[in-house]
Image (cartoon, rainbow, N blue to C red):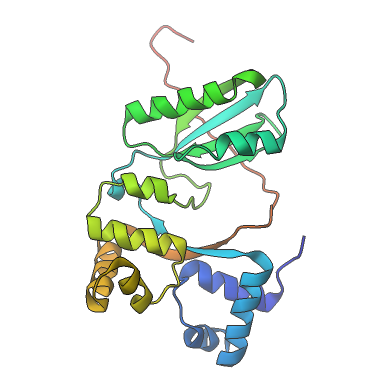
Amino acid sequence: MMALTKPERLAFEELCNDSRISSAELARRLNITRYNATTLLYSLERKYHIRYVPELDYARMGFAPLHIFYLNFEKKPKNSELKKLISSSTRILFFATTNGDFDAVAFALSRNPVEYSQIEVGLQASLMDYKATFRSAALTGTRFGFMPVSNAQLENANIDKNYKKLLLELNSNARSSIKELASRTGMKENLANYYIGKMQEEGIIKRFTAFVTDRVYKTTMFSFINYQISKGVM
């Protein structure tokens, strides 16, 4: 696995804080020429397949808190089999196999308890052949990090239709210019710019950020699970 060089790391940090930063501003912050900043940007995108997306506030889009499912398998499935099963779900934001107290974790979004139940039942049905056992918890104030929202989830978000149009485009490439966004959504440039500002002002968009899509980094994860116990039951 290739490690980020110092210039790449510094540039990537800036992109994580604001993926819509211009090449000129990136150059100023890194104290390099604009040409070098542009070259560095292209190099990062080519080597690590960086994706630029908005980080969104789930609650302000009509979703319940992020849920996490902890899975254990009696019969271990192959990663390729898991990928095929999980990729068909539009509600799972992130899925990873793990070593430790559980074999896999899945993060999911739902709008209400009914959708939550559908996600859980769907997972159980998909993984029935592997005799999977489940534990689940609703995470509030999670520190697991940023989870991008899929376009399928955006379609279900309870937000203004103009917001939704722009977010679908920004979710494909958050570095798209206002001109490009206006063209793709059929809006005037000043209106597209206004709506993006309003979403930031209202807290729907927390920031514009970036993440690597073709490298797997090993991470230690501490899991905190809340159990609600009825009186007299241990």
